[in-house]
Length: 238
Length: 313
Image (cartoon, rainbow over all chains, first blue to last red; front, side, top):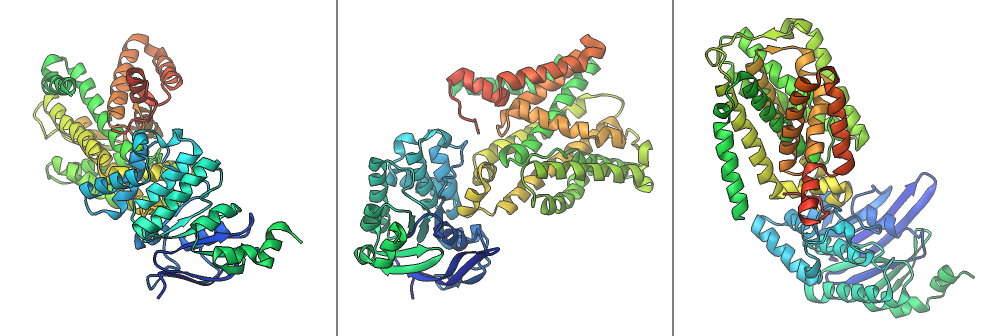
């Protein structure tokens, strides 16, 4: 049984079909990228899976449990973490407090939460910014904090919405390293939405799903997908 | 740390001996008033400051507490102090129902809904004459402490105020406090890390409402008179909010400083400026808002450390 499975997922907003009959699976310890041009439906998929939107049709199954109809916090507690495309730090809180809040959600005691928060702080190399206020961080670090806060809830699967957008080349390189370490060091599965940085997609993904106008047009290993004619057409036009 | 301890000791001694340092009945009355508003501001701060849900309807809970105690004392021969327990017991279910409805709304809409709720409570009190006496109100016979000595009342409200501030301090360092702050900062983020935002808002409202009702019940026992214009006016809700905001939203010492500054200054202004007292009071508010946008606490912190972060502890 796969760790995570999406079946026939469909979302209509009025007349607009944002996601149409999407089906895919994620195995334990696997990093899957969902790519596609702007407006392809990636963020909608994340919002459906995380419970922020209700699908028109379809199923989302995680560790054998159907998540449809569950509230976002229930899905988070079930073991699915997420980051937001437009980062949403807890602005007035420090870096450490942001991570600690996440840790409290999954911990049974104060001491345990603090221990988890320290661990995540080190894992994401944010130690030196421990007492900085989240609101004052530059975008690259805010993105990293976004990931750290979600990691502190100790998810089995993490949804990364547009992890690379707005990052400069060196920040984006650091982000790639961090995402690889999620899988390699922590065994956390990930679904990453990436708009168009092919280099990033190639280096982080075990598998790639290509969306266009809400439909899956290709799926496979990164190097296969990169050669796919329909994918090239979707990105570059006829 | 040592400086803090010293300050703590001095403050404790002052608070314990205050009614004997200020022996006139008027100054004792002002002390009681300040502590009452410390309690109210701190209780409001749990919901408005920590959880970021700006209620401008807390007079409703104050009034419910005051009426519960007053009606109990006037219709039965039970000790009026039982009213202290009754206030929160009556206010709690009201808070839960109100929360269930109002927390569907966010931001300014939530605030408007709280105003509406408190107006509803005021109108009920005004018109349910059999129970509340309508506009005439409820008079309680003084039976708690003999004579007109204010000192015992001082110690009762001191315990409430210190207890409420201590509770806030405790919350601010625990999971509950962090969850409430997460709700305040961003509800979607809070949900995304597994926080049941509705539940935590209800917890904050319940605590806040129960303490506010407790303070209302104390008020009834102290003033021995309750009517809608005294315990249920919109102005009271606004004053509570002002105290917390002027002192420092979401900080533990904030409402304490706010209550001391605003209540003391309003008494002083009333004595010295007569009819112009509200004018001066308003000017003071504007000055604080202009020069200390994070409240007195934020202003002090910035002054002391140059650190601009919003204080949370």
